[in-house]
Length: 464
Image (spheres, rainbow, N blue to C red):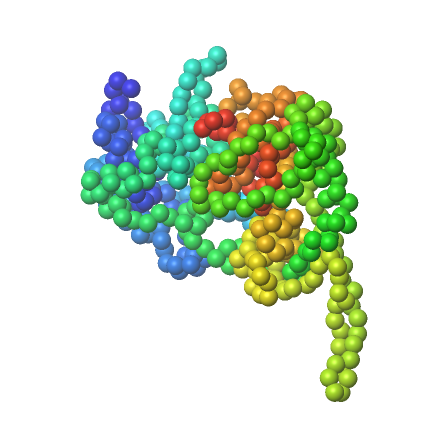
């Protein structure tokens, strides 16, 4: 850009070090920069700190703007945030799904409601402190905006922008996307910014760190139910589980090898891509699969373990008592306050002892208010090989890269932030987009976003 001074950029200044350095760099590059702080949450009673964190954030943001020498403005978007993010969260949890509020916040607030406020103040672009990169290339019908992973592999935040459109990207700037976090801190210290040593924010976007069940109890009522541990014997006799194994075996490239049904445990804190050993499936057989088989493959195992009671006499006085009969498929191991407060893969908050390995949530039955759990990382109920995204939920950041019905393509995929990228085959059908992973995945959770990349470019996403 020859004359940056004619381009007006609004920086979403949050009071954190990332957005502060984003503003600093834009100012140094000669743009006409102003800061806009948005308040999205009023209720401090739901945060673990119990105070108005946004007030401190605003104070720091205003000091940063003063230090850099840019105008500072304030906007209250709490009404829009509650209607378009928080209410959606409540509705999804009530259905037993697990939404991602940060993805929604970017799509509905930062690059929609906030963008409109910035434009009213004369902004040509909105800049944020996200660790991702934007590149604009020429296309047959005009410019095409690409989202690339951030240069810092430990801080890449492209996942949170997976629902943005080309129109939104045309107005977006990510000044720190090609910088690593330690360098951002160094630049902040060098400029003596008040946010230089401020800790990174945690918890729900613009709400703060919360105790999720307490937060959800604003609208979702607690209701006691059973925690049921599922034993390995359940899968030995489960028709659907055997059908999954049969379908996977039918498309397995090496007939002599046993099909993989359980994922190896990899810590998501490592931040490295999973090691590829090559696609284990015969792609011609994958392409020839029926819609029925793909749909079956994408459906998780459902649990229906019934417990019968028996009476017995106990103690010297032979008092009559009731207990559950032993069941080879599982056991009631505890109580919970509402199945809607739990999510697939969760291990904290179950409060069930007496096990060698951790218990993990493998299913939540909302209608019957039952939480099903399994012991250990390698429990069969934690792993799935395939997921489906409904046609209405498929979003292409690059519409020019949209897959046609019947097409299959290889991509890198992640199903949650911080997960190392996984190799997968995407299969487009009339009934939706199917993602078949090379290796089974732990904790595939409905309501979360699956995001696919070609090399380091994020091309699309969809709600699981």
